[in-house]
Amino acid sequence: MKKRRFYSGKKKAHTTKNQVVVYRRPGDGRPVIAAVPASREGRVHDKKLSDEARMTTPRGIKRSVDTGYQGTVMETPRKKPKCKQLTLEQKQANRAFSSKRVKVEHGAGAMKRYAIAGQRWRNPRKTRTIIIKNAAGLANWAAA
Image (tube, rainbow, N blue to C red):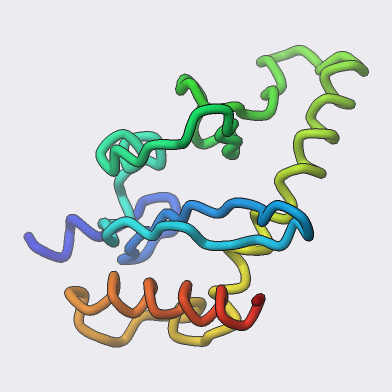
């Protein structure tokens, strides 16, 4: 079943996933999309995508990601423990973490300004990676 590979139980639809590496430009802090690995089927977990992509980071650069990457060496926000609450310090740390990451999220969202990257995919799957990379290039060009 070729279609079954792309079925995401979470989204209840046939989906594909793309990860993007975004950094804040030194000086003005604008987001720059640095890398877009190949598209994958939607049922693959974010952490597994990251492990398989084998992207490296220069020394001294912290990799901050969302809670989908728990259990990695990357910096993630603190999740609320089951049947407990986060302490005030943990909530403040999460808020500070989110305020640093918001620029990165804006960079990833800039790609979605181009309808082909943000809406339902109606093209052949094999062309998805190159189209998403082009949308990333356009987002970088528009932000320059």
